[in-house]
Length: 451
Ligand SMILES: Cc1ncc(COP(=O)(O)O)c(C=O)c1O
Image (tube, rainbow, N blue to C red; front, side):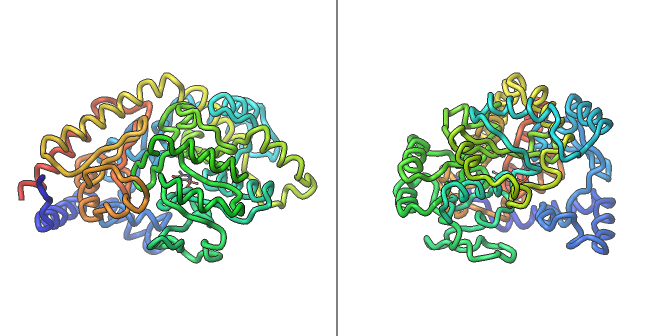
């Protein structure tokens, strides 16, 4: 198997950085100007992590593409890290949003759309009762609070390497088997080991040991890990997770925010999971801030039985704008007309095409890499076998190679999700978009191995 020479990698990285700067003078000028008004020159600090010495500034986006302020057009396989999995500005959602804006944005009162969306989410995911939020982070935060409230238990359990948004309890990782604040955690309110147990994915014995004391309110899990690359559950793991949570009276919260890529009812419907609570956000409002959490009949009854309605506005679950008319109109249009069964029937085969393209590049060059897919989400990694858990996935990271591939693609009009090599398909993505990525990846590898 060929090994990538570090010297060649550094040479190419320097060349690509130079090209990036040369090609993006307007983005660079905006980035410099922003140093005077934005912390670190960006709207959110993590935007400094894009490959390239500054982020490209966007002029406009539509469908599967966007154009930057220097006039370059990109095939967008990042799609706002799933926030734009609908494609940018899908016409039917934009029309519904425009119409709703003219009829009122936020009122602290329900609209008919809320009922429609609750019914549709129930049909898709099999959970009957829903609440709405403005983000997946909030859906997870509120789910955790509700689980603590009805079980009276103090802790939660998450998986090493997980990401569920900026939820304090989940910013944790395992180091040498010990739970610690995740690297980079900014000002944790308390040591997360006090609130949270963390175990490795695909390790039923560790899960059983962590739940047996009976002090865990809920397990919060993506049904397939997607934030350390794609890490599938091993056969039988979900059955064991459900059996152990039921046996110990622990609630199971499944976060479908990314795994909605598996199909219209997410991984939950595709694999007949039976969560007590389900959370989702990002794409369900076509980019308009939206999120939701759904509960079973039993969980709902337990919540209602212990709810003091008079105090429910200050009970730690809410948000003045949560459930607003605009976000519900966006969710309705997205579910009715954008992320439909027919759309997934197009998107998933395109995901397969992307997977085959990457696989072809890996095989043609005998690279010690692999590619994974979940529905219309594809991810490649620089190790021969798929990792089994977060620790194995983290150990396989190769930041220099990762950055070079991202920058090489960016310089040739293809945007991959930052932080890992993730590519997502929207209903607007075409075969030509997918093939462009395969072609550019093939060129990158050829140049890397030519050194
Ligand atoms: C699985 C999962 N859940 C929740 C979130 C949080 O989403 P948001 O940042 O939109 O609140 C993310 C964000 O990446 C995620 O990957």
